[in-house]
Image (cartoon, rainbow, N blue to C red; front, side):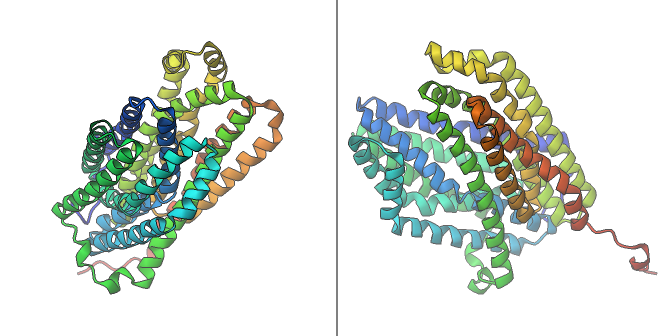
Length: 451
């Protein structure tokens, strides 16, 4: 984009921003499939279990700090819209410093982190031994993984989701190639899979810096005093902290859903796991439109272009709700085929079909939440977003307690309540936040035209 202005908001522009991130989201699970296939060929169930548990542990550990991606994207988009190239570099430099410090702290605290993760996993001794090997190696990817969130956020905030896709694909392809080579070629087992991830994350970080340099970024030239400037640093930390609370609330909600489903029995647990994949597929696309909202709204707010901002909001909400409706209809009509493709167990198929209508509704019910998440992050309205997320989590817990006797039906009703409450709360608060962001200048206060 041209720095210092907000680009025209059109359907083509929204799709140009959303589709690359959708493709990036869709290609990422391929890495897990290849890793499982490579380890699976070794014929040791304990190794496969360790890889699966390790992936879950690091997903939760790292994505807790996914705020670095979202906060950096919002701050960068606003600076780009305002034409402040120096602030773009400052935002990236601050994010990289925080990523490095937090990542190194994870490495230093690997012993207690690992002990807590292994205790929660409750796996067999054989799986725990292999998991310990995997964890002890992959934890060294922490500084690079978190720094990649910052790099990706800076890239997206500039409106270059195409480059964001390229970075993700390049890193994942290298990870896949190294995993196959180290696990099967050098027979390194889970250690090879972990080493492959560390190397790919480090490569991705270096490649990301090169890409940003081509875009004009020079974060390494930002003076230390500017990086540590109190107002800018506090704003960045506040935005990150708010988004982190939001992410933790989401983790708690879906973690409870899985845990309570497990208590209902193996069939219910398996059926819910199958159905959650429907929401995961829908969220890949919805997240792409949320990213488009981050960019368009952030740039419009930075440029102080109210009509462009409001147009971006309308397009983001419209696309998310329209897509959510289409996907929900698709899941309702073809969800049975999906269930049959994922599992061959007739009992699991029967239970999954029983709850399919609830799962099929999740894309539509969640559509407003995804759209307004992108809008709020782009506008850096992160404190109200955080508060509304906590309120939605509270509503979820109340519903869980109130309809506990409904079993798995109650679980699905509660998660739908959580998704709906997020979007509804943000939609109701949006008009007040927008008026505050673009205050109307009284007629008498307008400057006299120059003669």
